[in-house]
Amino acid sequence: MTTSTETQAPSLTGERGELLRAFAEQRELLLITVRGLTDAQAAQRTTVSELTLGGIVKHLARGERVWAQIMLKGDGELPEGMLDMGQYRMADGETLAGLLEEYATAARTTEETVATLPDLDRTVPLPRAPWSPPETVYWSARRILLHLIRETAQHAGHADIIREALDGANTTAQR
Image 1 (cartoon, rainbow, N blue to C red):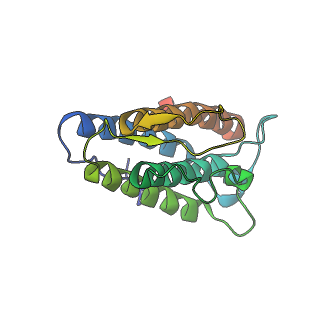
Image 2: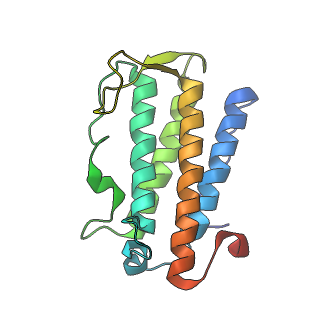
Image 3: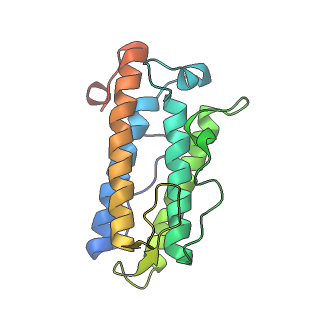
C-alpha cells in the first residue's frame, strides 16, 4: 500500500518491536478500507450504526493520542477529549485527508512513546470514567498496547462492513 499516511514499520527489536509491528499491520488493514474515498463517502452512514469510516479513523487517532498520554504521564488524569462523543463522527469542515494525517501523527506518537518507556511492565493508573469501578485500576504499558491493537482490529472489522455497504469494496479484495 502506498499512501502518504502509511507509517513505517517500527525499527525496535524484541517485544516492543513485535507489538508495534502487529499494531502497524492492523492500522494498515484499516487504511485499506478508506482508500480512494471522497470526504462525503467517509462521512456517510451505511448501516443502522452511527459509525462512519471517517468517524472510525478520527476515533482511533484520538484513542492513540490519549492512551499514549496515559502511558507517558502515568498520573491517572483523564486526558482532554477522551470521553468526547464527537470523536466518532466527521465534523463539518473535516476532511478524510486531514483525519488520516492526524491518524499517522498519532501512530508516530504511540511508537515514540513506547520507545521511551523504561519497560512494558510499567503500570499506570487508568483515568476515572463513569463506568470505572470504585477502586483505581492499573494497567501495564503492554496491556495498553494490546488494548489498542484489539481496538484497532475491532474497528477495522467495522470499517470493512461499512465500506462494503458503501460501494461493495472490501479489505480482502483490495489488499
